[in-house]
Amino acid sequence: MCKEICILASMLIFLNIVWFCTSIDTITLTRPIKDGDVLVSNGETFVLGFFSTKNSSNRYVGIWYNKVSEQTVVWVANRDRPITNSSGILSVDETGNLVLHEQDQGFMFWSTNVSGVQVNNVSTAQLLDSGNLVLFQGQNKDVYSWQSFDYPSNTALPGMKIGIDRKRGLNRVFTSWKSIVNPGVGDYSHKMELVGSPQLFLYQGVTKIWRTGSWTGQGWSGIPEMSANYLFNVSYINNDDEAVLVYFLRDTSIFSRMVITESRTIDRQSWHEVDRKWVDFWSAPKDQCDGYNHCGPFGLCDLYNTLGAFECACFPGYEAQSQQDWFLRDGSRGCKLKVGTKLCESGDGFVELKRVKVPDTSTARVNMSLGLEACKELCLRNCTCLGYASADISQGVIGGGCITWHGDMIDTRTFSDGGQSLFVRVDAAQLGALFLIILSLIAVKLY
Ligand SMILES: *[C@@H]1O[C@H](CO)[C@@H](O)[C@H](O)[C@H]1NC(C)=O
Ligand SMILES: *[C@@H]1O[C@H](CO)[C@@H](O)[C@H](O)[C@H]1NC(C)=O
Ligand SMILES: *[C@@H]1O[C@H](CO)[C@@H](O)[C@H](O)[C@H]1NC(C)=O
Ligand SMILES: *[C@@H]1O[C@H](CO)[C@@H](O)[C@H](O)[C@H]1NC(C)=O
Ligand SMILES: *[C@@H]1O[C@H](CO)[C@@H](O)[C@H](O)[C@H]1NC(C)=O
Ligand SMILES: *[C@@H]1O[C@H](CO)[C@@H](O)[C@H](O)[C@H]1NC(C)=O
Ligand SMILES: *[C@@H]1O[C@H](CO)[C@@H](O)[C@H](O)[C@H]1NC(C)=O
Image 1 (cartoon, rainbow, N blue to C red):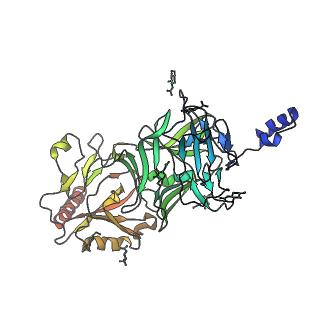
Image 2: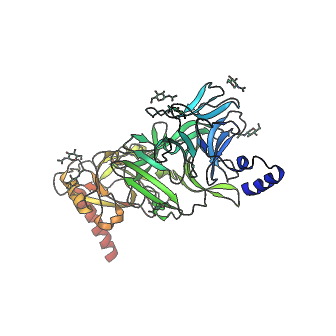
Image 3: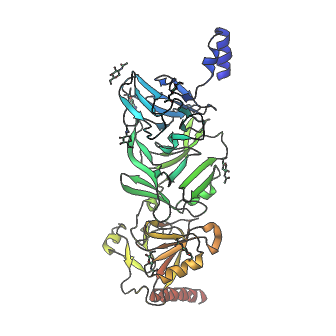
């Protein structure tokens, strides 16, 4: 595109061709951008500039796709402080910060607000082809003081780290827009929590509404379809520096993104050029059982049990807190140990629940150096342990790593396919009863 225009331009006017054709991707102290100007990333994938949403004259600074015909904004600077006219200027100031203000150093709408940066003349903000806006300190492109990928809006792009930088104490929180025409910070947020084992949550305000589950070595415990994802290669890193997930597109000519929507979902979409629209290929939460804590503590959400039956059941050895609630199909109060259960006296054992999303690890302990057998022993020896699971199912039956639960086990569900095994502690009497059921089933088969 640029070439054709360029040739045309050079035929019409002989001057200013270079200015016309070289897309600028940086902002410096002496080269700010004003409303109407844009930065175009080096490979022409992303654009940064001022935009308005439908039916609004408010101006925002944002980043959007250059080659996607439907304007799709992936990041917004002044989300809750729109500029009401076209007097906005985005510049690098003397403190090395990127600032958005009105002409003549008027009101400041947004700033990278990085402190403790060496004051210098050579800070540059560059829009990279990944969609990341990076503020470099000086000429050295290894040192940056700020990047938009660390302060996401509602969109995760390939190559962006999702999760926590432990060293800097930085959690990259994604937040929905207020509405499709208002990019202000909305109700829904998506972020990682580190308690137990790292898990990603979708929140509505401060209420958890969905959970990915813990990382199983192959994918999230609560997203069985993830391992079959052909579009990406996914890296999960959990070490002293960080706990993050990074997606890379295998085919970089595709545009694909994850969005926290205003309608309570996390969507993964790809751009279909033929139809000129974004198409969802994955979305969560999907069904009742995805709703966080739908069946309460020690409850198991199972849509595949009996058609038309109540989806909530209790763990083996547990019964409903309230039969009445259960009868009314409200499982939220969950389950309690069956009357007369004597855990941790003698002869305890475990019942295996297959193909499940393991419970919230907020009440769990994780030891990555124990196998599944050692995990069972560890749990048996400790009376507060109510169940265990492998922390890394890619190691097969031996299991790599051990999760033990020491409190309420909540938000457990089954899958028709995928998931992993959870081992629930039961007492000797319960084990005996289960044994009798199995014997009678065999007896029925025999006679
Ligand atoms: C914009 O305004 C038009 C006319 O008032 C209306 O039909 C349309 O729904 C509005 N669009 C949005 C996104 O609000
Ligand atoms: C833009 O609006 C601000 C107040 O919101 C005002 O101070 C400024 O003069 C306006 N600029 C222009 C160019 O209209
Ligand atoms: C900049 O950060 C400081 C603390 O780091 C905070 O107190 C201040 O309000 C911030 N300023 C702006 C304009 O966001
Ligand atoms: C900025 O650059 C000028 C000349 O290029 C130099 O004299 C001055 O010391 C620099 N200021 C800082 C704070 O580095
Ligand atoms: C995933 O893709 C990125 C970028 O193409 C590459 O650097 C990385 O090595 C790949 N990782 C795996 C596990 O294939
Ligand atoms: C994990 O288990 C090993 C073997 O029992 C033990 O040496 C180690 O201290 C445990 N680590 C943690 C973090 O509990
Ligand atoms: C049992 O596990 C809990 C949680 O990890 C721990 O605080 C407690 O010390 C353990 N008890 C014993 C006897 O090991």
